Length: 310
Image (cartoon, rainbow, N blue to C red; front, side, top):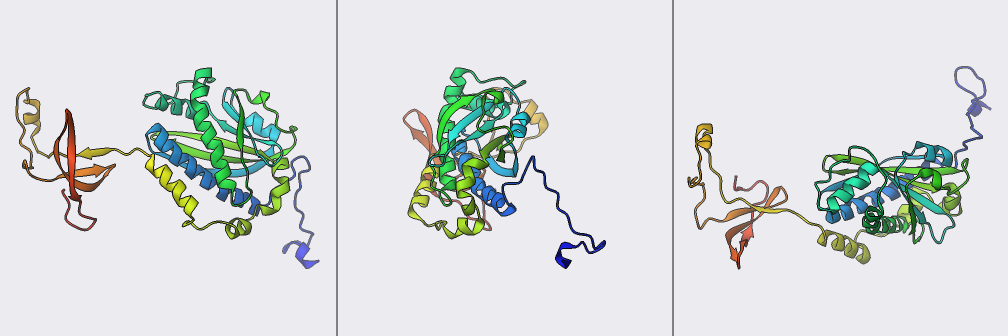
């Protein structure tokens, strides 16, 4: 009985148990779900980076279990709700994307800067159509993240705007909620993934880190390498060339007028630094291709620790 007694009082150690909200997932299972969805967050962030042409970062911030009623009550209205199947498992899951994130993505897709809306609103039918392609890819990414645990083929079923219209399970049934934070430039938004316990109950024994890593594939697996290569090839990066630099005083800057010439620190035949993103990767010479300005790559830029162009 000593193991059941507290060290100070000698009384039996009692653990509280809430019969209205019984825990269905162990800590190990929740940790496994976090690892699975960290992979999902990276996949979606990589896809969005290429699709909206700006850097997107995604990370799991919490994995918790609660009742379905409490989860629905915590959501704002209107919002974007994605109901998806979990085939071959029975039942459906739910992805919630609040307006501050979905409208920013739509603004970027339609050529805007990707600013946060002044007030939340429901998406129009046209905006839902624009988002549907991204949502299809997002749901498919869930299948890729789960493939080492359970071979599932999730499919987008429908979109909703009001949480009260979505009833996946009875209100008191337990669900697991995975919250993922995405950052697009200076805009931060959160995505919630809700999966009922009844959906995962048949595969609950597989929700362990031992099973996940024991059946995982090596990073060198051909299919995974091809998938990663395909995602990288579709990403967009900024390429810039520095023609030269010059220093002038503030007075000289204020006195500049059309027709004035500023002498740069480079010569006509000098190689120019070619920047990929914020790093200098190549050397090149300026020129033209038809009526367009162009640069001819002449070599690689010095590596870190060697002499640079600065």
